[in-house]
Length: 466
Image (tube, rainbow, N blue to C red; front, top):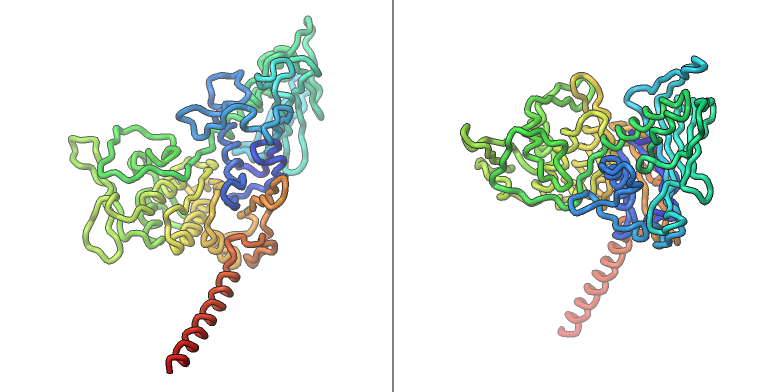
């Protein structure tokens, strides 16, 4: 789970400042305020980690990628090629990282890792990316066990490794330069060959890859519902960037059972999805049926409130088909997942948007096979109703305030700032930005003034006519 994130010189952000990441992390702001850029940056790093090209510092994306960010000049702040994109983040490890220095015999361990990196255009070519430096810190709580850094020598595409609280010992052989870096984060194999006791850096590389392999993304534009779905028995990795694998995920997970909290009964995933749709007031019943035993085609049938008839998914409100991938992704994702979502509330009426917040609380509390699923939700949203329900649940102690983190992209300042919303234990927000969700009180006041004026005019016309 991500604990902290900071991004500098990326798109509209000169500096996001330190972002506290919680099990439910929310980002609000006006259109084009930069809130989407935070998720885009994480997805770009994920794409880079999963790219087959080990020398690609960043992979901005292609035709079928979650994000397509273009060239470095298009993604760097103010499109200034002299700017360096810098970033750091900290995350908890599912299993503590432990290793022993083979020379001293000293043990090192930590339950969290912190990473910082800096990327720039090459001085020589001005069109190739290069890593200026990166650094790992192994942490046990707030105490640092060790740190190790790889930094580029000035004016050369060569690197030098250095460590704190750990003594790197060079092998007795002819020295050679460290020239290659694995993507934006990886120590080259030469580091292990160059030092007698640097094998542990491979575990740092692996931990980085595990982090980004655990990230899943669902965009704001989901595929429309179909009358028939084909499934060949394949287990999809996720519901897909636009929810195209939603029904396949439901079918592949029919043997999985999810509990919505400690000591709450575990139920089949499909039943959980149907229950959540019902609690949101969208349907009464939901099921996925095979067309026949001889065919690999399935239909999604829904019974809406107040009706006895079962209908196909395309025959009900558009909002149901748009929120279904959200629910399935949240409960389908494997334990330890980080789920990035843009506007999960899209096309839902206000009551359902509020209820969706309750679903998200259930997601972070959910368990499978007797253990916490440890899901983290990173959500970009425009919904006041979603936030209001979370505030209420914090006041009711249904979710601790520490498990909710909310930020507002403020473009009233130059450069833009990312400001944390200060939510207390009573669910109150102490630093509401002006007109955060529109000028509600202003609209009410102006409506009252207009109504009074209209009544006065009507009365005067009546008196004149008499």
